[in-house]
Image (cartoon, rainbow, N blue to C red):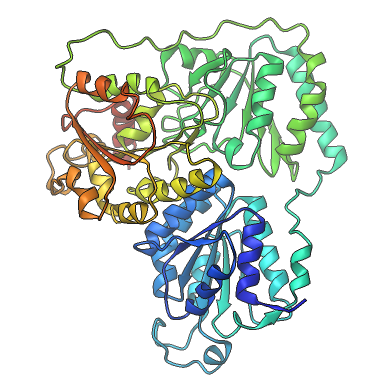
Length: 563
């Protein structure tokens, strides 16, 4: 069997782990590498508008499919992507960042090449990325290159963190043995230490047996580290009340009769807050306890009986079990938890949020009404993206259908993130099921940072719903500080002209300002089918915001003002 090039080897390996779309931009140090994409049947090159957007798109793709790949060029390209890569690192998203770098001989001679700092240091950008990568590799030996590629792919997938892989331009055309592809990359987790794992399970079972008012709280890493199925089974087997954090929306089935709502500390609905904080046992799955995820760290549990399940450790009360992975623990717990809950009587759940009161159809649309209403538009299997700001907070008032994927960058909070992530999510959805809907809610200010990726959506005939919340500027910033400050203002755009401007042929533009227009649109059967790309401009008052965002903004402003 003939050898294949190192470049093709990379893409064959990525295809084997179900990464079928590659994000990024061309540059002279990666052009020969990019040629190899087209040699792998079923693989495609997305071709983004800029590297930052490409990193956001890769993040969105990885949140749906488990891993993604972005390719940039040395220096100028890779640095442009780093904000997005840092967000993936912070939020546990597996993105392989492949960088085309100058040839080994050029580096050895310290040539004054373009895209360098002009000082002969070819390692500086690699060192920058090392701080926001789980591991890095700069390939210098064709003999060990395939193994390094395999290691990087495995680490990206297993740890759900970015990995940096530098490929010199002179190596990607060199041959490597084809038979190496016959051995799949090992993506399994290493088993837990048996003694530590047994102690964890025994202790958790004891706590469950003793508890009369336990709850389950699911957070972001339940989804990132692939324990959604286990978490939902745990809810069904125990019948414990189950809650999610803002970052955890979509990790458990919210139509489950034991789902109790979204817990955000003091910003929670009062009934939800009381239910969680009065519990005598909290089983916390995949917690990422950032300020916006906890109501500015306002969790106030009454109990010390807290079990934290994490991807690489378990914490029970004040005891930490490093290296004990929740995937194995939850599976083994499911096999034995039935006997521990025999005496448990399910407690009543907090009442669901009351629906909107009927109002005249010409009522001006407001956020509180819209976010209470939007659940009626969602359906099973949707991928729902909510941008930092009003959307990320407003979505907490909604009820997701089953099998929903929620994408929101609550921890890193880079404005404009979802403008790129919607592209990656749309590619991923198309690969999984072309009938799957991708729905974006983004503010008019945020859209201006990453709007170029609408052109890439159109180029690939992808068909998301783009809900642009037009409140004439940065409302979240205005609520925190400077309600009338010029720096929170933006140039108004004619959003319903954007699809045409970016070259769309089959599209739909809608502009709505009233509750009646919202209901007419979202109840329309044709509109509910993802048959074309759609731009929906939602006109809202400037300072209008969901109630929980107003409360969070007050907390943030208070914290920021303290010295």
